[in-house]
Amino acid sequence: MPALPADEVRNVRVSAHSIMLPRGKFCISVAEVTPGLPPELLPGLSVSVIPGDGSQVRLGALPGTEWLRLPGDAVLLEVASAQARILLTSYNMAEATDARPPRMQIQRLDLAPPAPAAAPPPAPPAAPPTAPAAPDGLMVHMARLGDRQAPLGAWAGESQDGVWIEGLQVTPPEGLAAEELEYQVVLGKGWTSPWSQGNEFCGSRGMTLPVQGLRVALRGDAARRWEVRCEAETASGIPLGPVGAEELCGLEEPEPLARIRLSILPRAAGAAPRAPARRGTRR
Image (cartoon, rainbow, N blue to C red; front, side, top):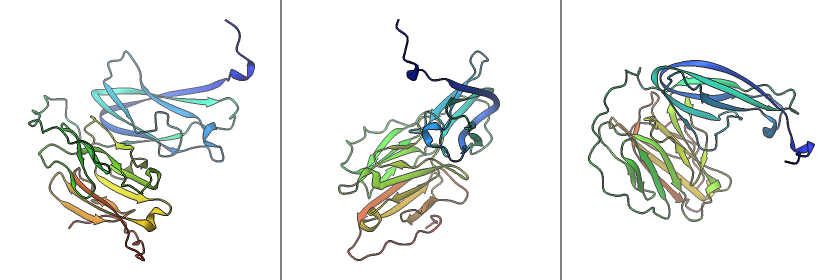
């Protein structure tokens, strides 16, 4: 086999350490990186499970964050065994001699202290097949139920015991580019997902990790051409909103959301964008 040219071979510095986590749901995210370095030279961090020790862990990377490199990049994990040892490995390109591994933050996301695993409750009756996706619309992924689709302006989700929204995806209306629409969800108190653009999934699937709030933003000139109206209902039946662009539709003490109604409408001629409030409120 011929040798590779010298300029195609790169040395990589690797450092690793492990942490022990108890049973529960966690978010591991990048809190701080080496300042002054371009993103392509920042070390990348991989999160994995040490094999062979009996740990039962489910990993779920948020969209676009298979490698943890920039502040806000995060991975979700669920520890099903009594405890698990997690391996954090940092890979640093050799030319970035002053780059340090990112400083990580670990946050517990459980709504309540987890109990030992028990038999799951019976699944509710299967719902009718979801209608074909509308040209624009809101898709929500429901725990134990799967995906539910609704056009913009209609309610998406289900009000059932033990069911909540785990993730969502917004298809923007005609005339609004995907990159002009962004949204993020609340996954725990004080922690939100990275921003996702139109047509991108935001949240998780199958990790019983509920969406507990939603913020929708319009970027660039879109804020002058469109307006946002967002309402929601928690799994306990508390109505929220309506709120506008950049406003958080959620509670101060977060609760899982069961239904969301999102409207994105052309702004009336001459109407100025409303100054954003800090948080959605109960109706």
